[in-house]
Length: 173
Image (cartoon, rainbow, N blue to C red):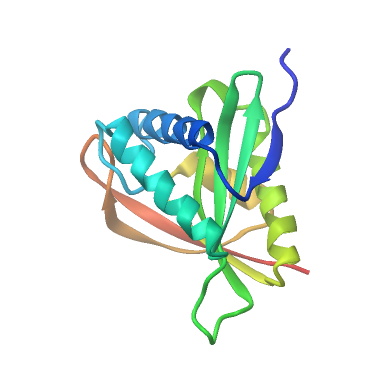
């Protein structure tokens, strides 16, 4: 059995880390994850996305967490910290991605727990997210997230066809 992945915050992602994040994103889209991109997702497009995220991290608008296993970065989640002035207490959980090689090992739960810690460190007391994944819904519910509702036909699946998106929130102590 391989060791559990470790979770860490990236404050200034290196070129190699951005490449690894791009590989995770390409893998997730190829596997059918509805995460804003269509299949096939070119590596260069995925890399450009992560470069934009890194710029938001540098500006303090986002917190970027990654999980590593023996092969490198295998999962990630972001907290969108920059919110309108009437919502300083809130953050959006975004782009929760786990490479197919690392699934079913508790990685999602570890990333969520780390995101809670990070949100509290930034004074956030309310987290929100949306998902198009029934598997992720089970994970979020086990972690204490509360379902708000679902909107049918909200987005396209990466291989085509419409999918619903479900919204969740979590209040932090």
